[in-house]
Length: 178
Image (cartoon, rainbow, N blue to C red; front, top):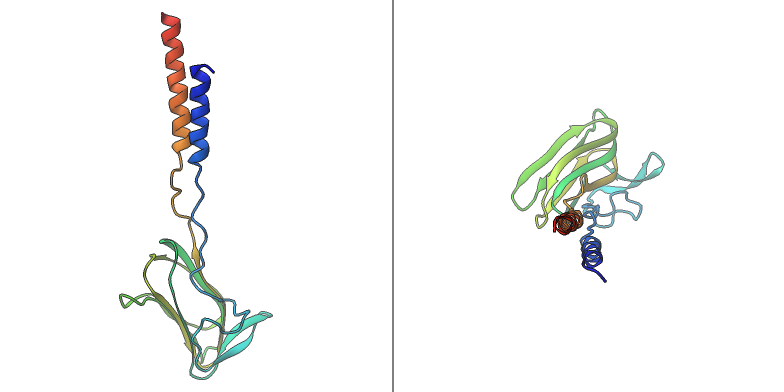
């Protein structure tokens, strides 16, 4: 095996070893579609109802719905949910950094539809999502990564291949000049 073949083989091996995968899309909220009932949710005065043909949390008079969660990867997350609430009985929602007592998102909404916001969440912090109403439905609550995190080692394979090609071209010029 000559030196050129060895260099190319080594560069390909390094490129294969450094191929990285993106951070996984990690849901931050458990059972936000309520298909398994109100599991993982604290739900005083809340039952299971139906919103757009699927299981949803139905907040009765004085109803509350909340959950504490953490994310596995720090980054930008899309936080959202589907809702139906009357004008006289709006749905109040809040997403907060429970550890530091900071409110990240909050509001009162009526009507029906989907609400989505981007928010930065960090690994190792406990977050709380909560809803309250006197007669509203909530479904499809989720906090999923909006943009995958950086890929560890991305570009190292191309760098190794480029270095090997440069070295081989240089050796060829040196051999031709001698």
